[in-house]
Length: 325
Image 1: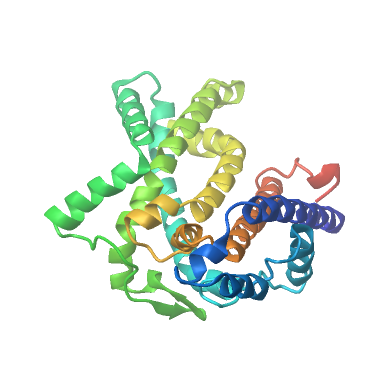
Image 2: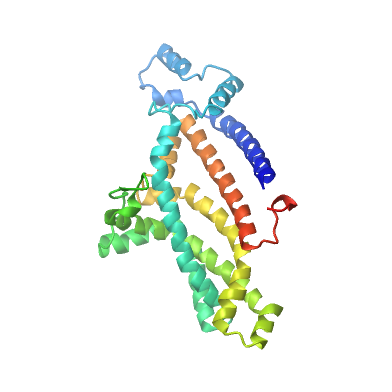
């Protein structure tokens, strides 16, 4: 287990280095942020002084080496626009993004797993058709359009929920979050539901396919022949065997919810990392763009590692790295 973790850590460092090089070259090779940062009437000398102050007068490989040196010291660079360390800017927005992603992830499971189980168990019935048609509908509608409809119906017409913002925050285990206040939940419900709909539709379809296959398997037929109740067959035998393929997809989807909720954050004016990225792209704030992408990659690496470890807990026959866990 220890050797496996060390190997995965080495792989993670290599992936981060590779991504940092590709992203840095991609972001720093295009556009000139100095022209957007200086006043329109700035002289050529003032523009050049700004370029030198930001280190943009150096060759791009030198800039990357300086960035990499800072990266090993935990420094993701300083924002051109806010003149603050990038890590501070991201950490200020990270709690809002994490709580939105986790709330959406839980909603997608609460909606998707039961409906997927029912559809798989009653495959071919009218119930199955209704659930699958609903999932196709949720899967097909553009995310931003769903968000606008939710705002129009529940915020503007019914006035049940606020149309945007994060709401009041409280402290839980030393972490400031909106999930411990009524105001916070009223603000997070609509964006989390909007973010969860696409994932719930995917969970329904995946769970249905896995349960349908499991219910036609030999061990389920054997359990039925022994007189095991249908509810126990479904939950103890079929559902347990579909968890491993589900964990793989759900792990990646959790990463997607945390990293790519940009559209939902924009529609609901949610003050998370996605909104920070959009603002940074608009003003070509290169250090923030690169720092955001590196943090997203690091989150995916950690989530994939946790998924692999979860495999061994669900099925002890699976061994990490081909060796005993």
